[in-house]
Figure 1 (cartoon, rainbow, N blue to C red):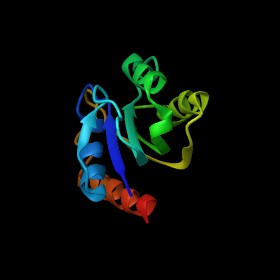
Figure 2: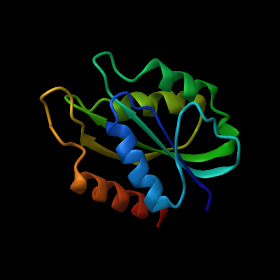
Figure 3: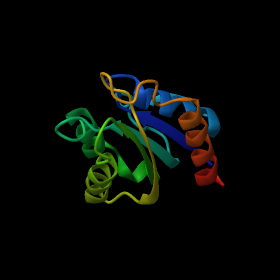
Amino acid sequence: MSTAVRYYSKGGNTKKLAEAIASAAGCEALKIDTPITEETDVLFLGASVYAYGIAEEMRRFISDMDVSKVKKVVVFSTSALAQRAFPEIEKALKDTGVNVDERNFYCRGSFLMMHKGRPNEKDLEDAKKFAKEILG
C-alpha cells in the first residue's frame, strides 16, 4: 500500500502530528509544497484552523492536487479553539471528486497561553494509533 503524508503548519502543531502519523505509516511527512506525483492509496492530509478557517495554501493544494493519483484522503488537524478543519477540508476535497475517509484525527494545539504543550506525547501516540487503524 502506498501512503503519503502532507501538511500545512504555521506554528508547528500540525507538523508534530504529521511526523507521528508518517512514522506509523512508514513514510515521510512533507509540507504541502510537495505535490503528490505518484499513485497513492492513502494520503494523510493535515491542517490547522486559524481565525478565518483553513489556510489559503491548503485550499490551493487541494484544488491543484491530481486526484487521479489519490485513492483516499484521511484528514488530521489541530486548533486552539474550534474544530473546523475537517468539515472545511472534507468539502474542498469532495468538490474535487476525491474519496475522503469519514474518520479523521483531531487534537488541540497550543496557541499563545492556550493548551500549552499540545499536542503532547499522548496526542502523538494517539495519532500513531489512528494511522495504524486506518492502514489496517
